[in-house]
Image (cartoon, rainbow, N blue to C red; front, side, top):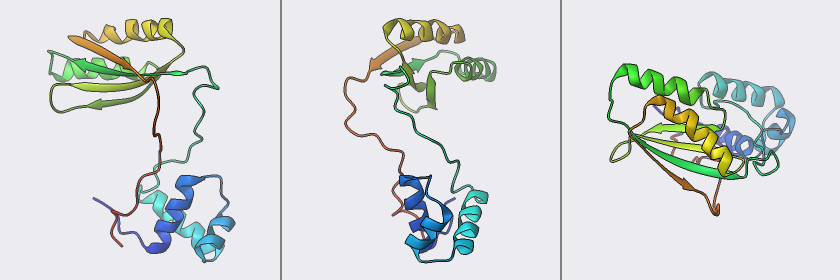
Length: 157
């Protein structure tokens, strides 16, 4: 369920999504509230789970992980034991950034980053330990848009 968010909270969230390194003082000044009020609002947003975490986003090219791959998984085993095994396998592969259980023709969609094709081959060999039915991979050739900023115009005030 979506949280009730004030106009000032929305401004705080917009600022933090763009730059989480801003000081509470900087945010307070831009929003037009006191530092203590700003800190309380940020803390409340964290407690309510609106702010999930604050992280540093790295340039994957600079850390030698230039190749992004989306891996479509189909399985013919739809039981708790297989799902637990699959979860354990994907949790153990650091190059896997996201795993989504899907509706439709796919069972799971994975986003991973690798150094190169031999790096993908190593990931693939680890992944298939989960006893998969079908694996299909697509490699990103060009990224046209990439953001972590969620649009905030859908939250109620």
